[in-house]
Length: 85
Image (cartoon, rainbow, N blue to C red; front, side):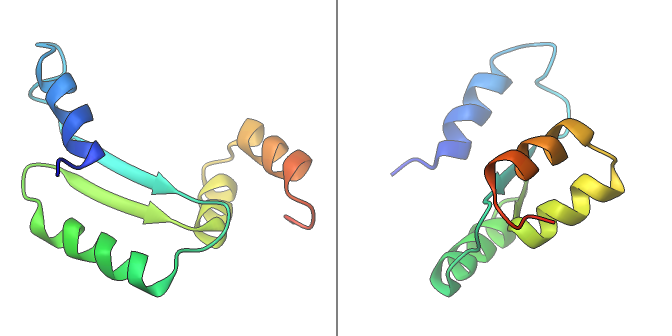
């Protein structure tokens, strides 16, 4: 079974202007990942060599939003997730 990241990667590699750039695929969730999902994501992350895979839960997303001063994402999180801050 082909991973979704492989489908996107094949599409990106078909475009000459993006083919030679570093590719990073990120999975974001506004909740948390279950332990078996973390195990699976780490297994995939450690097995790929041609691109990177990262994954973030709400706690990590909150840190990214604050560190990068992503006010529009912060606003969305505040509007849609009660008790976000």
